[in-house]
Length: 458
Image (tube, rainbow, N blue to C red; front, top):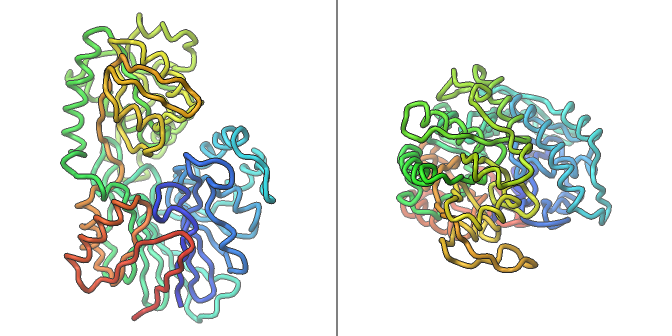
């Protein structure tokens, strides 16, 4: 008997958390927080776990929408055993502490939840058990009633450092949870390797970019060419470029791309500004470069000349010292570094803002990226409308699989059923239609929070 219950991140991107009950053993796949929502609304619906066994948590990777609510879960259910790759554990030690500082200002203590402390995070991180890629681990929960154990294997998901697709096997039934997965190479990370995952029963498949035309996304190489041309126009006119980025993943990939483009003479030599937790995560990318599959093993991010963004108090400094600024957050949430820089940037006619990754439709970053020079935008509910005087350019350097690659994952794994998660309605619709059209024998489920699905062998 296998039951699947989404607690969050089913038909949305944020607060990913999926519960499996396998013969009495309770497993949680990811434990994220929603980056846009506040308070209890930002957490998975842990109340759905009431009276259900929970023995293990498997974290696919260290982005906050997949790991950020782990401290809150441990407050409720302290006995669970947590597993991740070694790299995800290392990153979690940085990002969970950083998130605690942010949450302290936004999450009220309500309904039995309290804001966790840094000491609690230290204990939590130390308790995380690690599994290497392709290492098989057997387990049984306290109420496991089957004579056969459950086998777990992590496979490289290609998304960011340490990201894993998770294979779960029990009584000859195989379930693959992709987490966030990318089949294509980036500048640093190599695309996912699913070559050893064959003929599974259930595929739990992310759908982030399923609703986006791949012609629009382009390839990493084609986007580099567009980026180089647009950046050169601004830099040669003395302007500076603001790139809102996620501190984990996108910062490292874009930093490497910009450096290599300058090194080969395609991109105008200029200052690069970084700082904060993104720089600390870059050190982890360097430290693990021989331990994971990488496209550029010898490239060390610490060797790239970078200026400390956080030492600049007067933003007029960028008029005399232009360059490329990599600042979090990637969606330009209010109160973040990229949002604080935004006010100044919008007033500068020679400057530019380049979007490079996924942005939620209700965030300031999305509003900027869907506007153009001369438009007037209201970034948040309580701010006055602002005119955009700078250049605005949208690029796609995807760390998720494109829609055709998602279909390829179905072809590679040959599942009997597919459960679509981690995507908006249009992504579920497009991906579902393609699967039903191309694979008529596959049973298809579009996951919804709170709706249980039975994954028993037919």
